[in-house]
Every structure is written in C-alpha cells, then in structure tokens.
Length: 262
Image 1 (cartoon, rainbow, N blue to C red):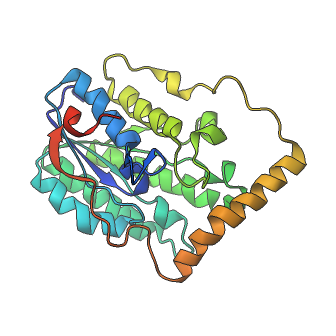
Image 2: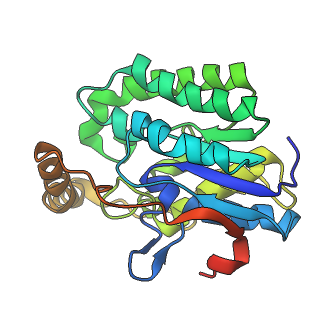
Image 3: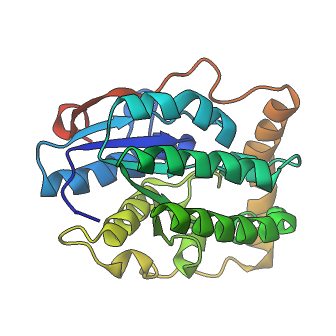
C-alpha cells in the first residue's frame, strides 16, 4: 500500500472514537487520531474524518457509517468492528463477519485502501471473560480470511504479550489508556510501512510491573467488578448503549492540525 494518502476515514466503535484517551470535556484523541498524525507526516495536507461512535455493534457500524464513509471518497480507511458483539451472549459469528466483510468489500470496490486489526485475548485483561476467548481466536481468523479476500491490510495487535499490560488499559479494562491507543496507532503505522515506524510497539513496557500477589489481585478484581462490570451490565439489562444519542466527533474531513492538537 502507498504511504501517502490524501483522505483518511475511520469507521468503528468506542476504541476508534478514542474512549480512554481524553474525555468528553477536553476531547477524545484515540488511536485513529494518532494514526492520522502519523499519516500527516507523510502528507501534511491529509484530510481526516472519524465516524466512529461508542457502543455500536457491527451491524450498526455498517448501517450508520458505511454510506457516509463511501460518500466522503477516502483513499484510506480503517474498519474496526465486532468487539461489542463478541462480549454479548447472543454473539453470532456469521452475522458479524458478514457485516465486517461487507464494509471491506464496499470500500475496496471504490478503490479505498483499507486496514483493520486483530482483537486481543481479553481474558488476559479481564479473567472472567475466559469462556469467550475461543470465539475471539476464531473471529480473528475469520477477519484475516475476509481481509485476504479483499486486499485489506491487518495490524496484528492481538497476539503480542504486551497487550495484557494493565498500563495499556483504562480502569474499566474495556478501553485502551492513552498509552494503549498510542501502541495501536504505532501498530497501524508499522503495518502500513509509514516512514519512521518500526516494531517497538510490540516490546514490553519498562519497568515491569511488580507482582501484586494473590490478595492484591483479588482486591483489584473486586474493585473492578463494583466500579466497571456492574454499571456495564446494568446498562445492558436496561437496553441502553453508551452511544445512544451520540454523533460522530469528526464527521467531515478536515486537515489533521485543524482539530487534533492534544
């Protein structure tokens, strides 16, 4: 793929929106904003739009973001969808991959270069999700196959040990921290072969975290259940989504420096 693009459009959910990297008062940054900055070093005139909205399932991303993305005529796009589906008990792999592949197909058919990523084993970050680790592995394999069929580039984020480092995750463990978003942007830049990129994003953080011991780990789990899992579960039971009544933060292509300043 070329390393010089004129217009980049990001499609996705909360990770692509940038949740965990900034806040709604100061503004969200996130890996897609950071990747746009990488791309702008190769082409300072790059225009960037971000259509992602937190909480969206793959079918909603396809229904609400694909047509606007196509209308913007990007020459580069990222499509990251499916994690919200994977975390639900009603997960249907066939349905989700159909929506993801449809987005790959529509964008590449228009001549857009597309990139995506593989998901990490969330059980390494959230131990109680061990029952779904098999579906994540299988889903990643199907994303790879769909990407190969459509010439979509993949940033292989999922299998590197560093992704389990708590410092790459926000306190809710569902969203990346600023450092985690930075690593994802670097992973995309490396996959794209952008000038100055390399594989240092795969390396462990230094210094290593001290061993918290069994008691420390148990207390951390109890705190996480109370402050993150229970509120998340209550929203699901009430049929609410964090993306309700939200709109994309950057629906129109603008020069990167016009909005991203953090």
